[in-house]
Amino acid sequence: MIESKKSNFERTVLVGVINESQDEEKLKEFLEELEFLSVTAGGKVVKKYTQRINSPNPKTFIGKGKIDEIQKYIKSNDVSIVVFDDELSPTQQSNIERLLKCKILDRTALILDIFAQRAKTSYAKTQVELAQYEYLLPRLKGLWTHLERQKGGIGMRGPGETEIETDRRIVRDKISLLKKKIYTIDKQMKVQRGNRGSLVRVALVGYTNVGKSTIMNMLSKSKVFAEDKLFATLDTTVRKVVINTLPFLLTDTVGFIRKLPTQLIESFKSTLEEVKDADILLHIVDISHPSFEDHIISVNKILSEINCHNKYSLMIFNKIDNYKQIDFNDSSTKINGHFSLMQWRNTWMNKTNGKALFISAKNKINFDNLRKEIYEIVKNVDMSHYPKNDYLYPEYFSK
Picture 1 (cartoon, rainbow, N blue to C red):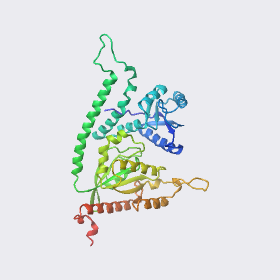
Picture 2 (picture 1 turned 60 degrees about the horizontal axis):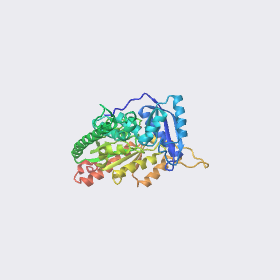
Picture 3 (picture 1 turned 180 degrees about the horizontal axis):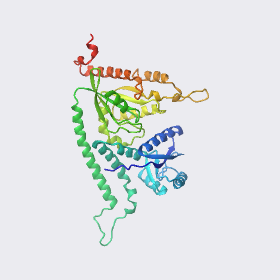
Picture 4 (picture 1 turned 135 degrees about the vertical axis):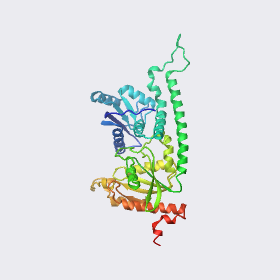
């Protein structure tokens, strides 16, 4: 197992680039999210650097002048980590580490570190470990630059394998072993899912830190770990929920994020199986976040990748108590924050054909309506699957 190192607020510098795919405003949002990730991992962001480039430098990702500027700041401010918002190639990471003489992470490595801290069950730990090793494999060369030369000469002729080749073989063997372990657990989990009986399955999906676990706790009266940090939930939780007399299964899943590492999507395929097996998706959105519409797009993109985009979905806009409308004047360009909650409600009710709710799970605002809406949706699915279950619905007794 690759252990995650607990850091005591390591001083951190963030680096991002402005290019054709992301303008200055978009980069600002990404760096704010990267800062939240860094804080979650145990870092303290002391400086952010940005550079406008058409294409990344193949050697150092950013230009030499910017590298020199960062180097001077690191020396005079006791910085221990530099985090890049984009994924670095093994060569870029090695070159930057050599120039800056400190720990270099990219967004993927940072997310993997948080996942390593958050994983609680053996299954989640195995999934994270697999993703870590797959990320590490192409980067072993940079870790062994001082041992690259194969030993030779009289009395030093070994079995023809350098230390880095030995390590690569060990890592590949470990990856193979972890994949077999995950395959075995997957089969067990598939049997478990099949043994859950004839209950309708509902899955909570959404961007990370939107309040899925809080809603799970409110609906199921359970105590799933919920915290105002990214990836507070990593292990999938399934609870039986009863509204009126109608039972169904509710699943809390790992949150999605923009630029989600491919290693994690691959490693967490079985966790996403819970989403694939669901009859209904409750798509939770943090409407108080300035980029909530981008979050919706990111989540829908991942749902599309796992062929879940056509499932019945209810949009639940959470944290309405945190939403702050920005005053609008004629001289400014109208942005998301200028719209009122009522305007957003009308917009999304039209977009979703009425399949949208606005709530605050924390303060239980509009929560009774949420329960009623979920009840109606689950009842309709249950009636279509199991038409003889009339006795589950209280309204039938009053007829």
